[in-house]
Amino acid sequence: VLFRSDTGTGNTIACDHPVVREMVLDTLRHFVRFAGVDGFRFDLAPVLGRVGGTFDPDAPLLQAIAGDPVLADRVLIAEPWDIGPNGYQLGNFRPPYLEWNDRYRDDVRRFWRGDAGALGSLATRLAGSSDVFGRDGQASSRTVNFIAAHDGMTLADIVAYERKHNEANGEQNRDGHNDNLSWNNGAEGETDEAAIGDARFNDQCAL
Image 1 (cartoon, helix red, strand yellow):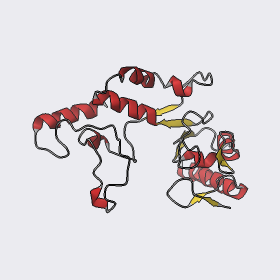
Image 2 (spheres, one colour; image 1 turned 90 degrees about the horizontal axis):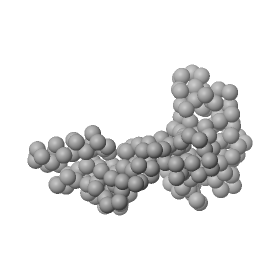
Image 3 (cartoon, rainbow, N blue to C red; image 1 turned 135 degrees about the horizontal axis):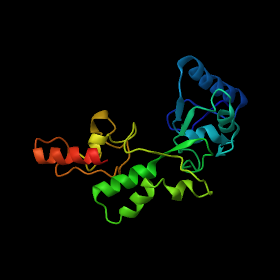
Image 4 (tube, rainbow, N blue to C red; image 1 turned 60 degrees about the vertical axis):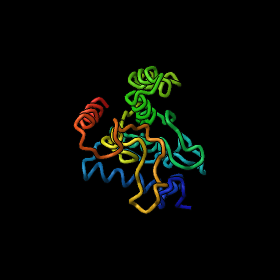
């Protein structure tokens, strides 16, 4: 089997197959050698570590990438979740993989939204998320902190909408995450009120 369905996006290759593993390695090496790429961010990265459908942080492909002489000095970033069994793997990738940290995103948004009791979590995130990345006695954090990305609301939308508005794409607003930890500063969506515009700008700068 060369394909699996652990991403929800289709065309997902079975990375525990030896032929697929070599294809992935050859592709990564190509981009380093001929395009000068200095790092890779792996979307839905548990797919790379699934062996027989189960995530293994010591999976052959993950080890091969980290130990490859062409790839070993590249920046390696894992988005540590997919939709497969036990797909949420934040904190479970081995060094040298860095990890996209959604807990940082969510806790920082909660703090700036004004949620009660959010200060302690904010401090933990700003200090490197030791509750996630220090569980095995690791001396340094591997967190990649972010506020907004290609998934979900943009930075501008986070401070302008309390809820998602995906009606225009024909999915009747069913798609996308329902809890974006967002706020609108006094008006939902576009507004000409200068005070609201200023508040949104300040919030974006703070975030």
